[in-house]
Length: 259
Ligand code: NAP
Image (cartoon, rainbow, N blue to C red; front, side):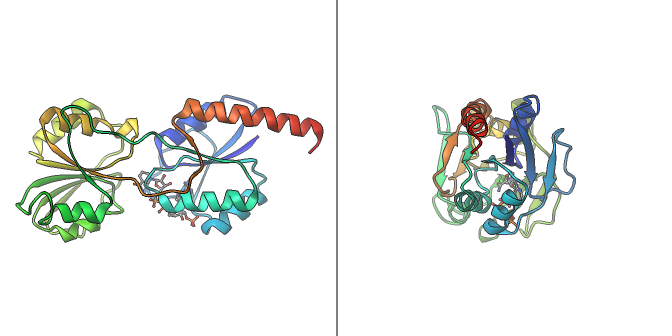
C-alpha cells in the first residue's frame, strides 16, 4: 500500500520509520522544506510544496498513492486544509496524526489565547498588563512578528534556524527538539524568564518547557490550535499503525477481487 505522509514533525518521522520495517507498506515522507538544513530522516522522503490542494491531488494521482496521512504540526493549518480537499477530490482515505492538546493541571499557571495576535495583545496592556518582562517565545519563527504589537518586552526566541526577528529587543537561539526537562529548567533560570509563550502543540518532544514552567511557578500564555477540517483523528503512532492495518486488510481484499 502506497502512503504519502505529510510530515515536518517527530511523530511523522517515527511513523515513517515504523512503516519502513513493514513490507506491506511503501511510505514516502513529505517535508515543506522550511528548515535550512534538513536532518536525514532515515526513510524515503521528498521536499517542497505541491502547489495547493489541486497540486497535491494531482501529485497523489500521478504517483499512484493509496492513502494520505496528515502528520503535520497542529499549527500547520494550510497544508491540513489542502490535504482534506485533495483527499476528497481524489477519493483517497485520509487521517490526521495529531496528539491530543495539552490541558492545564494542578500547579499550572496558564492564560489561554485564541491565537497569536491575542497572545501579543495580552502582553500589551491586556490581561497581563504592559510592564516589561523577560519573555520566552517558544513558538518557532513563522508567527514571531505578531509580538511587534507588544514591543516593551525582552524576548528570547527559540527556532530551528537563526533569523533576524522584526522585534526591537529580541534574541534568537537555534535549537531542534526533543528538549529535556533538565535543560528547559536550566534555560528558563539562566535567562531569568518571567513568562513563557507556547503553542498548544501537544507533542511529547516539546512538552518539557511546560513542565519546567510549572516547576518554577511561571505563567504560560498558551495559544490554542487553529480550527482544522474534521478528518479521522489518530492520537499517536500506534493508532496510525492500527488504522493503516485496517485499511491494509480492505486494500488486500479489493486487490484479490481485482477492484
Ligand atoms: P502551512 O502554513 O500549513 O503550509 C504552507 C504551505 O507549505 C502548504 O500550502 C504547502 O505548500 C507547504 N507544506 C506544508 N507542509 C508540507 C509538507 N509536509 N510537505 C509538502 N509541503 C508542505 O505550514 P507551516 O505552518 O508553514 O509549516 C510548514 C511545515 O513545518 C509543516 O510541514 C509542519 O508540519 C512543520 N512544522 C510547523 C510548525 C508550526 O508551528 N506551524 C511547527 C513545527 C513543524 P503547497 O500549497 O505549495 O503544497
